[in-house]
Length: 327
Ligand code: 8YV
Image (cartoon, rainbow, N blue to C red; front, top):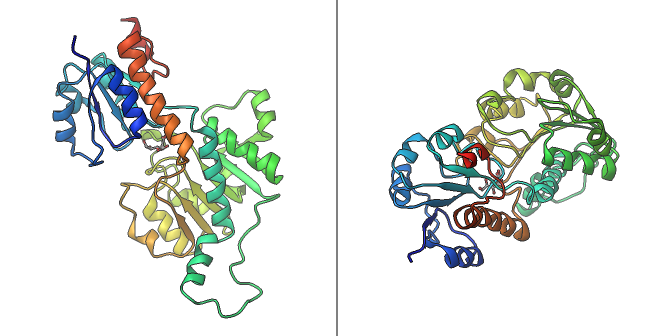
């Protein structure tokens, strides 16, 4: 009997491909080309399953070209590249890759926070450029992390991981804002206090964004919000491009309306707003918050487990639209 056909839309660990190939007839993309939407749809048109990353947009037009498709497994916890309603309407299961990246991503949030507060990359560029000829009392003075007020916007699993690192590791005063307040036990474990968004913006020394992207979180941080922040504050975005208005942020950084920013995600990435590339007080990284070898492997394996779980055993591990399983 022929095996079900699955598309693996981007390059991935050979061990993950090996596991998939035991169950499926796979078409791979180890050259790691980012296919235009029409090509993605064409390659997926005879498949029952697809393995995607955040770069692949799965919307109604793509789905309509793929009548045999039963599942798309995203190797990411965020799934704003999926139109889940369009998938549900066509009976296509959507899965993401939660939990396995929580601690690694929280580690990176802290790395970016510390690099931003203590001007790590800016000072390294200075040294490499041969500009370090003498020590000076105020050179690359930044802001303290320990004891400062850590604000978190979006208090899911990753937000809670960052809160714990701040409260328990660095003695920070942790405040947060979220659509819904955490239950008291979780708040106590994070030593975090729920505040309004306005108080969060006004009082955070370091504000970390960890909320999911949706139409309602588009430009959650724009010119008006940046204007409410302290001139000494640092802004960290490890969530999604589009949550911050990057053009407004570039202006705020240039005018020193806030002290600095650390950004791992960008509007329209991999393009970066040119205004951000020319200001010194920003640390820029290419969407690597989950990039430790064990975590990326775990994410790849979880996406593969979802494909195998659903197409072979009828039981996906982390479905986003489980209601379609009942049909
Ligand atoms: C992924 C991410 O590496 O999980 C997410 O939501 O943003 C990253 O961890 C990236 O999106 C690749 O799919």
